[in-house]
Amino acid sequence: MELPLVLSPEMLKQMTPQEVEELIPLLREQIVDAVSQTGGHLASNLGVVELTVALHRVFDSPQDKIVFDVGHQCYAHKIITGRGPQMDGLRQYEGISGFPKREESEHDAYGTGHASTAISAALGLARARDLQGEQHHVIAVVGDGALTGGMSYEAMNDAGSGRTRLIVILNDNQMSIAPNVGAVSRYLTYLRTSKGWLNAKRALAAGLKKTPLVGNSLHRLLQRWKNHIRNIFVKDRFFQAFGLRYLGPVDGHDERGLEHFLMRAKRLTEPVLLHIVTTKGKGYAVAENNPSQAHGMPAFDPQDGSPRVRSVARSFGAAAGELLTRLADEDPRIVAITAAMADSTGLTPFQKRHPHRLFDVGIAEEHAVTLAAGLAAGGLRPVVAIYDTFMQRAYDQVMVDVCLQRLPVTFLIDRAAIGGEDGPTHHGVWGTAFLRHIPELTLMNPRSVDEMAHMLLWAMRHDGPVAIRYPRAEHMLQAKYPCAGFEPSRWESLEAGEDLALIATGPMVAEALKARRVLAGHGISAAVINASTIKPLDEGLIRRLSAAGTPYMVLEEQALAGGLGSAIGELCVQQGLTLPRHIFALPDAFIPHGSHDRLLKHLGMDGDSIAAAIAGLMERIA
Image (cartoon, helix red, strand yellow):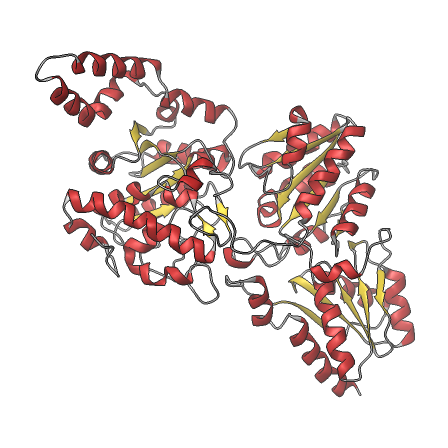
């Protein structure tokens, strides 16, 4: 059998069971092939192929609504709903998204990108259905990692108390990005390994195989009915306490069995949770053997999983984790906190060296920040390593629990820039705006790994909250400009210039240096200043530029509203200083997905585009 060029749910429903079995490995092959070319989420997508096939055979999308939590398991769904030919443009500029996207297809019922949201969204869709007198089904597909986030329980509690007709499918692979932690993970392990079920299964299987003549036939019959028998021995009380009818655990790689249980859930008129057990990375040895590493992968060689292009840039997160580990060797007060992303944020060395001082709280960013506040109030020096896009979820906790009490918590905020191929849900471009206005918080943007190290050393001595925001990797251009030190409110002059000054922060320092070289070819001499701290500003430097009458412009890979340029403008208006002539920042819009370089060019924020814009501005100034 060959994979049809364009699949549809209708075609899937018309296939025989044998054709479906032949289709499943072909879907996996297309997913591996696509991700090997473009990069993307691999292991999570491979684990839900049978489930996705079963969902589209049992339900009628787009009339029935399927909501994927996070969405990093939607690739088979995209192929089945007619987007197979577009998979070669997955996550590429102007190609299809790596997440569900309502604008992309009527089969994407809800746009996602962050964890623990699906049950709430599905409940909203279900109640909208009921209020409008409609009859379709609503299904939320959530991973067990999502159950480490409190929002899932808020939604289940609401669904159960309201008795809203809703199907929640719990895809239990014992993983989120990293192995799951906490009491919920242990409870799911109990359900998967219930002694009564396992003992009964083994005894029946052994006994039947010894029965003459009919033993093997009876054993095959048992295999087909094992999920019914399982429900006799596995008694759930946890989900039923929320008011959800519990079904499972069910083998998530038995497509026919999944169809049976989905049909059963479909007939129920109450909220139901179907617990399926899957293997993350199923069918591709590289992903099965190392599901954490294969969660999100760059383009790779499908033969062995090795990256097609090896990065030579230094990772901010890895460097921060290594330095923090060394500091913790000397200072027992230092502890680290991660929200299910120890490896991704560079904390794996810390976890190995100081396992009792690394707290992985699961996908629970709000809890992570307030936990840090409690640790700081107890006399420790907590460091929270988190992505900028996920820091948004803990805004209230940063303000009230940490900053209001002026507690010495340090936030290492990774991916604080345009996030590239993951798209608008993962761009870290609002952190400056939602952190800058919080009193007592010192806010820094290092231009290089070396400068970040100086900032972290300073933060460990500072008696108050600190946020250090940085992109994924250092720009290679920074190697030409070693960092000699760091002092808050003292910006760094990297290059002198007579005609204008470019005040840049974080990753935009590299683009400012590029623009400077291009402008020199136009006879324009530009100074480049590294604005290393957003709060406090270097007020003295701004006053000197104003007094000298030097035109200056601001460059930041952040939203214009509330960013560095806004901060400088506020200072100038309050103190009667000369305003910036221009602010190069991100527009009031959600930025699409694509490579970082391509998106900078799309936004007119790369060095060449900035230089061309400045040359035009300087002509008008003259």
